[in-house]
Image 1 (cartoon, one colour):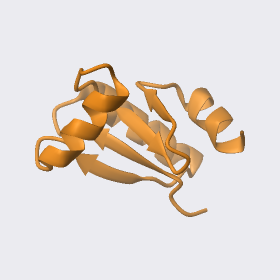
Image 2 (image 1 turned 135 degrees about the horizontal axis):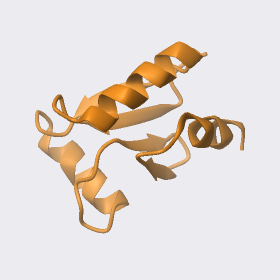
Image 3 (image 1 turned 30 degrees about the vertical axis):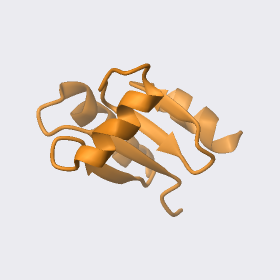
Length: 80
């Protein structure tokens, strides 16, 4: 299964670490971008979150986004 979404995160985000571990256990592949190292990524996150740079934010190939989702929500988005 190839990556079908990008996770925007920061290195210090506990929620990001938790979700990455859960996705890894489920075998769900994703790309990851650190919004502190990539300023244009911070703008993508802010756009998806009404101006807030909330992480983790997942942006799917179809342009939809989920913020701090459960693994179940990610799975549901992947099959829809």
